[in-house]
Amino acid sequence: MGLWLFALALSLVPTTGPTTREAAAYDGSTPVAAAKSLDRANDRHDVEAVVVAYVATTDEERALLDSMRETELAGRALYDACMKRFGRDLPSKATHAPAPADYVADIHGDDAVVYLGGKQPGLPTHWVRTGGRWRIPMKDILQIHLRAYKSLNADLEQRRRWTEGLNGIAHEVVSGRYGSAEDVDKALDDLANRESQ
Image 1 (spheres, rainbow, N blue to C red):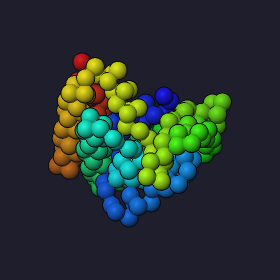
Image 2 (cartoon, one colour):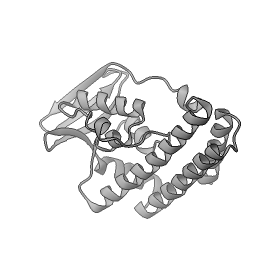
Image 3 (cartoon, helix red, strand yellow):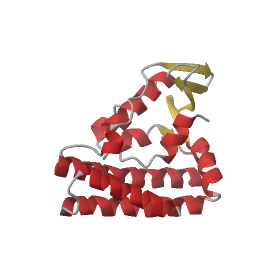
């Protein structure tokens, strides 16, 4: 399992609100097209297009994906509030390097590994073809989360608290509590520190 997939799965960085038009833009025709589509969805802050890049086959996987979606929607609300109030994204988000343009795929039937940044330096991500579309199996994400949180319930509870925290900070941005995007970034750092204890 690649570090990129791990970072994506555990990502708490704000992404986007749903629109049918944007979600329909997901291209799962090949593993590379799917990886590029997922990167574009993340760049556009398009929660629904991000979520459609995953496939959940069990109740546990669906519960985790639903929880991830709720967290991402809260992140989108925070992103929207910052854009409206400050005219820009958060500093920590804005300084992230763009995704590498070089993608390489090893395809074996309905399984593939996509390397971002090329095979040597790239980070591998597992993709499966299901229903004619290439998607990331939530089974992989669930395994990562179970290693980190020991139980699905502990993971879901942590995500619920984080989601509430994001929604609370978004509300505070709208109400004028923070004078700058940097102040919001500090509030997010404080929230993350509280959640990690």
